[in-house]
Image (cartoon, rainbow over all chains, first blue to last red; front, top):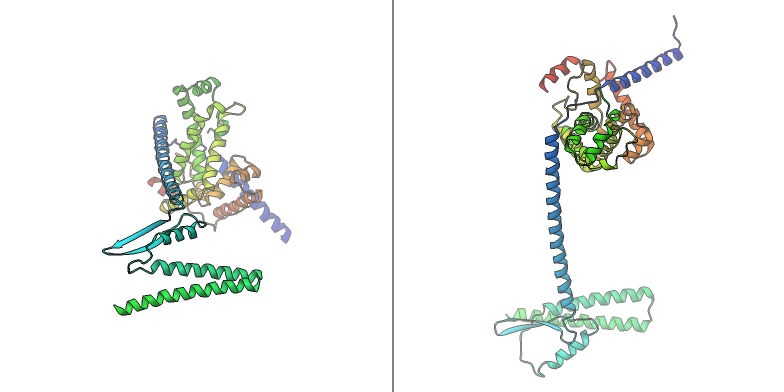
Length: 195
Length: 199
């Protein structure tokens, strides 16, 4: 007897459907109950253990939150103290080493009062100060910072197409800064060679 | 054989359990725990994780018992809680990683996912075929074919599209058919039964 391909395909399809039904029937016939893993007493014990763990976790998280809040408060207080340390009195840090000392103007209260404060501080110094050896680290860093700032200003001015006069003024100011930096670094070189 | 969805608890027991009567709570626990654990174990496979989820399910049952309105059998309501917890766990990357690690450690025990106390020999093959599926595929097959969930419900529980559920089911059936074909991955019953003595 000849079997046509359509018949064969139909047969395969029917077999597949039967197999599918068979699998589903077997799945549904699987037992739907299992030995419970533990009895009521153990269940209650685990409930209590879980509640204890969660309450301990709650206490710990509250403690961590309190510590974090204290740290934030301390940081805020320090920041406020630094900012409000009196604009008329620039915070100066003097580090002394033996008879010689370095003087570095470090922190000024606000940008606006910086120039006034510096002038007041300069005026308060004796007219002919004794010869002291001054560290140049802060001066060099300050000059380099100002140079970087000046470069930014110049770039922005060029992009915006600022007036040539303003551009020239900025370039002149930059040249002066470079000159100051050169003098400081040259002085450092001389001191180093003299030792 | 009692299906979880068919388990009903008398109203007076429920009322007492809601009032904190421990004896009534024991009755509910005893009636529902075996079927609940079986369902959780079917969906999860891994015993340790299944125990954790069973504990969470039963705790949720007693905590939320006052919300039960009695419109359906208690078992149906409990099944919703269990399925929700299991599928949430399957969706969680943390639990997926744990399942993956545990499956590695359980690899030596091919029948580790078997949950039934004394299944007939014909059950072994289908149990083994089920364990050969991925946890997600197994959950989809079980929920669709046995628990009667629709593709829409399964997709909603997994937070995925309906086609996700359909494709998972189709691939799982293909795998199961291959398992049952003579040239497929099926192993003989003899070796399974010899393994079952070890368990």
